[in-house]
Length: 184
Image: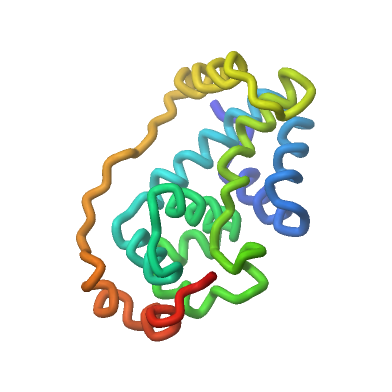
């Protein structure tokens, strides 16, 4: 049973948008406790898995003029960080990003990425175990073992249903805004 459910997860994400998101979430989760940290990470990974979609990757590729594996992870972290409504809307219709994206919701370099959000769970767990967020192999392994006991799954396979030359036709609205002048 989860102590921290989906509603609380999204409430925390929404509240964190008022601050340095990853830092605030790390500190807030560490105040709550180990089980809440594990629940947060479990839900976060479920959302990362659900967003590991060829079509969404294609949209990110158009936005940024290319998108590596790591960049797609950071993009999906950013997307989760935008909150439940935006996350779900973009999964249903990635072209909504053409309307949604503006300088207020991009990082300092002008990209829709949030790499730091991907490490909130391990950082909060490490903070609880050691008193700081410095990397600790033993704590990291303990964290992964605890998540495995909760039944965490990681989606790592994807079958692309597009080629780069297809993107203009697949995403005409995104292409019109970002195709010739991608972000960054």
